[in-house]
Length: 459
Image (tube, rainbow, N blue to C red; front, side):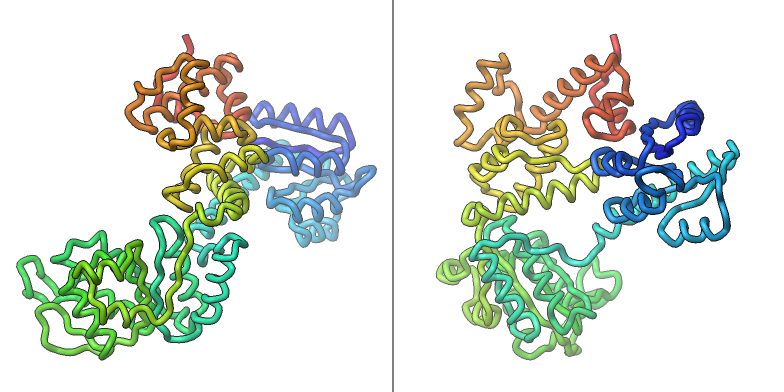
């Protein structure tokens, strides 16, 4: 439900505005001074503020300036002593609009609606910018991460090829992106190729392109990744899965800075910096005849190893908190607190999926927990296959009466837990959807979707 905060030291004004807005089905909070209003803005999810200018304790303009430092909620300023100068000053300090007392009902409602629409657009724009923004930071202060950051700073401005090693989900792609971001090629494209996701018979066409008619499905000419990355950076992810024939062509491209499209004869000059990554031990792959030694030496001018999350558990609190804030912002809910005990439990888990697994875990906890993420939630919703938690699961079986063996997958258990939790909260609030959505920290439309998904109806 949309929440409007009224800050005005005149009770009749607050009462009138509350009656009007509640009739329009807005949730309304009101206070008689700016200091309390700012405290509410820090603690509650507010969508719009109606603020008087002339007030005791704190002037409305001061409230506006202070609020702008902590939130981007739109402000509508109201005053019984309105002048053009006052309106201009309010706009200059960030107010959405300025209304004079006595308030015109129609203008008030139109202004409120437009301000809320603008606020929604601002939020959506921020989410989209985050999704398409520049590369995320490499989080952590452990020795391994500090070494990686220092190496990136030294290597990125050069043309040296880099081979990044590390387990799946440890952040190899993020290192490659920062090598490109800090290079002299940043204005040119970074082209990524997942060598493990492309069939061996198509990898050469993907990398070097093909001419029309070069094979059965080649109905038109295709430009390959090397040409697309010309002037920029080519990131070859999971290069240990590349076929030997494609390795030979990549080696030639690195040696001569030239490629030939599949089915073509013309040599094409390319200026590409290659960064490769793998989760395999390439020296063992060379011994087994699966990887070319000469290509390995071409790629490994600089070696960067990304440590697993288990090797840098001291970084988990920083990373988990950052993920929590990011995911809550994406869901448009207040950021949930991860308690100290919960953080210690996260650090104790075996992170076989590394950073990727941690992000999924934090998202799961945000969805299934209440306003705080506690040790209990971590123990309940952690990966059931983790050997460390077998005893915890057995205790849960005895205490809750659940037979966890009945759940074939984590998703099945998650759906069950989510359905039970939502049903409990709806019963508690007499099936008031708006109140329940506010209590569990999700949007009303999201709660309706969950109710429809699980077929929840009041008896």
